[in-house]
Image (cartoon, rainbow, N blue to C red; front, side, top):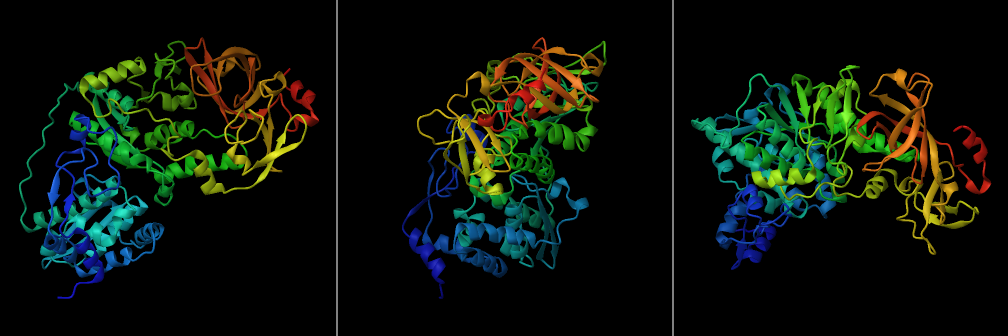
Length: 603
C-alpha cells in the first residue's frame, strides 16, 4: 500500500509512543479548580491546565486519523502544509479568506447557524443534496475566514459519512496548523467541524433538542429597565453584571470584538481571545448567553486611524478615551444600544442628574485610585443619559470580595494595564509596524548640542525618560520638532523653565451650562492623566465654548499636545474635557528662547 512521505513521518514520530491529550475538564472547571490562572498555549499534545490524562494512541489509529480526509480537503491541507514558514501559512489563510465571495447572506445569519465556541463570529449553513454536503459560511476575522474556507470548500460535495468520521486533530496535523495558530483558534476549527457534523446528522434524522435551564436564577422585575451589559472579560464588568441581576434588571450581555486585525497577530497574543473565554465563563455562571458584536471596521476607522494620525503629527493620542466616546457609547449605542433603556459597563464612575440644570453629571468613583472618569469625560450629554456604572459606589477590594463570594472565574484575574486594542502588544511595536523607523537627532535643549540619535519622533512624548539610552542621565524628552524630526532632551527637566502651567484646549465638551465659564475664569481641578492626582487651577471658555484657556496653580512637566485635560469641581464631579492643542510656556527651541511671546498668551 502506498504511504506518502508526510504520513510516514507522522506515523514514525508517534509509533510506540504515548500521546498526551487534553483532559475532559472544561475551561471553567479548570479555572474554578485553580489549576491555572491563564488560558492554554498552542501545545496540542498535553492539557495546559493540569498537565495530566495520558492517553495512548496506536500508529494504526493515527494512520486512520491522518489518511481519511476527503480529497478536496486533503489537497488544501497539503497546500498549506507545504508553505515554507509560519508567515507564509498565515498569509495563505488570509488569501483563502479573501477568496470567499459567496458568503452566507445576512438574513440567514441566525442563531441556529452560529458556531458556538469560536473566538470569532462564525456562521455555517449545511444543506444535503443526494447525501452530499454543500456549505455556506461567514466569519468576521481574516484568519478565521481562511479556516472557514478550508472547511467549506474542502468538504464541498463530500458525503455525510466522510464528514462524520473526520476529526479536527486530523485536519490540524495534515495542514500543519499547530505551528501558527493559538489553541483557541484550533478549538475554533473543532467547533466549526462539530457544527457541520451536527447539522448533517440533524438533516438526516432530526432530533428533539432538550431545553437548557439556568442553574442560577435571579428574580426579574418586569418594570425595571432592559440593560445591555458590556463585558470585557475582567472582574469589574463581571460584578457590574452581577449587581444588575441582583437588583432585578433584565440584562443582555455583549462582548465587543474590536481591533486587532489578524495580520498583526504575530506582534503578540491576540488581545481578545483570552478575554472572550472569561466573558463566556461569567455568562455560563449566570446562565446567560453572551452575544458577540463585531466592530473591528468601525474601531479601525475611528480609533486606530486616529491613534496613528496623532502619532504621525507628533501629538500624544489617547485611544482609550476615543474607544469610550466613539465605540462603546458611540457606534454600539447608536446601533444595538438604542434598543435598550441603558448601557452598563464595569467602569469606576457614577452618573447623577443635576435637578437644577437637568444635565447629567459624571461623578468621581468611590475608589479614587481606580476612578476612570478621565477616560469617560469626553462623553456628551446624549451618551451620559444612557449609561449606568453599577460598581461606581464600590472599591476595588469590594469588587474582588464579591467575585470571590460568587466564585467567578474572573475573581483573581489581573487588571488590564495596556491600551485597550493592543492587549499585550507594546505600543512602540504597533507604531513601528504602521509608521516604521526614521532616524533623527537627539538635541540637548539648553545648548543645542547633538547628544544622540533616535529612531523616530513618534516614539517619544514630553516627560518621557525610557528609551533615550543616553549616558550621564537621567535624560527626559522636553519637546520635539516634527518637520526636522528632532527630539529635544534635558537633564534638568524638573527646573522651572521646563515645566508648564498654562495651555490651550480644543474640542471641549461641557457638562455644565456654558454661561458659567464663558469669558470669565472658573476655579477648577484638572487631571492631565489617569490617576487620583488633581491640579488646582482656572479655566476660561473661548469663542463658542469649543476652545478654552487653562491655568494651573502648580507646574506640570508632562504636558503634551494631543493629551486630554479633564476639569472637575470640588474633586467630585466632572464639568468638561478637552484636548491640549498648544504648549504656551515653552518654545520649540529652548536654547533659542522666544518664551516671552509664549508667556504673554497666558496672562
